[in-house]
Length: 184
Image 1 (cartoon, rainbow, N blue to C red):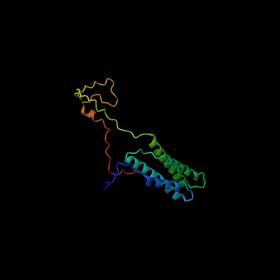
Image 2: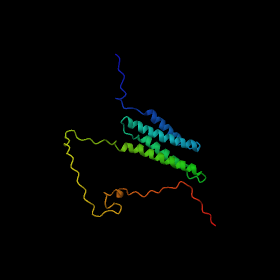
Image 3: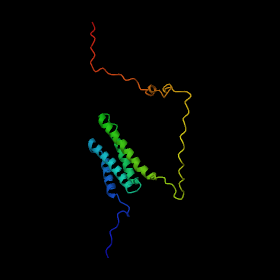
């Protein structure tokens, strides 16, 4: 008896490989033994891997939120960036890069947590048992009542051709250079 292969769309997808990679990146990012440029690249890897995992879950219809273990790891990595401070001798460029990394890690941890708490928004649909009302015939446009207090920017007589053109007068530039007046 020959069994047909299982349809991959019936089984819930597993993101074990992506989750393991994210765990590894988080563990490495919590070790403060690397030079700062390497640490910044590790922090970026954590952010990008988390976003990719959240997006992959959304693409297959799963809730985008991650499990408690991964969220706790993301928060530990975020807190680890704070261990670089206070260092008064740190150059301003490095400090700003670490600030940005901490903000991105905090936002990513929030997305991973919030994706679990809030269900995906569904589009509102009209109930099928109610019939749509017949469209009403278009009403005749009402004539606009004259404005009793005209605006200072509105011309009194809109039917005069010169009043329709309320643009500022054009100034023709003289293309010839002006002669400099010598103080004498």
